[in-house]
Image 1 (cartoon, rainbow, N blue to C red):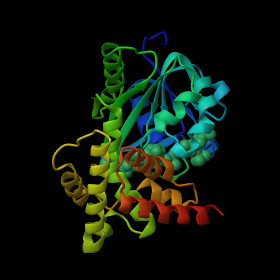
Image 2 (cartoon, protein in one colour; image 1 turned 90 degrees about the vertical axis):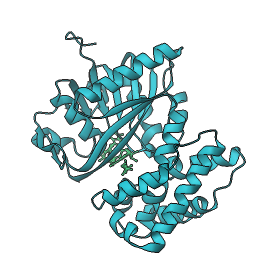
Image 3 (cartoon, rainbow, N blue to C red; image 1 turned 45 degrees about the horizontal axis):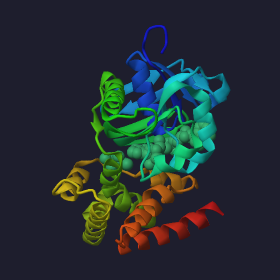
Image 4 (cartoon, rainbow, N blue to C red; image 1 turned 135 degrees about the horizontal axis):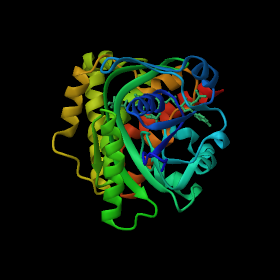
Length: 318
Ligand SMILES: NC(=O)C1=CN([C@@H]2O[C@H](COP(=O)(O)OP(=O)(O)OC[C@H]3O[C@@H](n4cnc5c(N)ncnc54)[C@H](OP(=O)(O)O)[C@@H]3O)[C@@H](O)[C@H]2O)C=CC1
Ligand SMILES: CC(C)(CO)C(=O)C(=O)O
């Protein structure tokens, strides 16, 4: 802890998600340090700018920005805002930026992302998952557009918290950080279930936005696309059930209705494709397919979507 007893927060990967949550936490008075890569110079010069349909136009300047992790002070909470495709490369950086007993939160979509990172981190670090219900993207270096929503749900994965009470206390501390920044946040008793629940949205929309070159409004207005989205959502629900997670009754229908109310939105996978970055196919497609298959459940529509996306991703990376 810092001398003020406020936890020190490090953002590992300051893109749309890292920039949004880091900026709001800094404005709430937390000591926040941002690791950047390609946008370091721009953020050093001009700060971080948030154009938010919810919070208005906000600027953080100066920013405690770093290009080298070795220059960051040890942080009590590390919020990882990079894409899951970077996690293995980021593990040594996360360990380097961590204060003793730090809490590492993967603010990422997908399943089993913590399982893949855990063996690469010191046992002394707590590992948590953060499910971000938000529509946000980078518009220019250091400039973040926030269209809607903003909640973060946290779940404990693994680490030194050996009993339910200790895990619950950590979740409450994490939830408290986001709430202090004016955001909705809830502690989730089962991270795996929370990740499956989030996938009910990401599996259909992320991939179909790339394959069909369409945002949510066009997808929802087209009867064929809408039917396909519903069928894929149903498969995710069945996959979750096969893995022992019964999702709330009518959950997929509620997501469809809330997407109808959302402004036209291009999921983060769409932006990755457009920028020729690798797609998060392992976390969002391969991992749930593998988990369901191990539980004896095939998900044919999701598998077909995954295979088509793999083709597109490979060609896009050439
Ligand atoms: N955007 C959204 O609305 C939502 C996104 N998510 C999930 O959140 C996660 C993050 O997504 P998003 O914020 O959109 O992604 P972005 O691409 O906007 O941000 C990723 C950031 O990580 C940085 N980064 C990657 N590797 C390193 C490194 N080695 N050192 C320093 N920085 C690094 C990138 O830097 P560089 O520019 O140099 O590549 C970039 O700034 C994903 O898992 C996504 O699925 C979840 C809910 C909503
Ligand atoms: C589902 C959505 C749009 C907001 O709930 C989101 O969080 C995402 O793009 O991953």
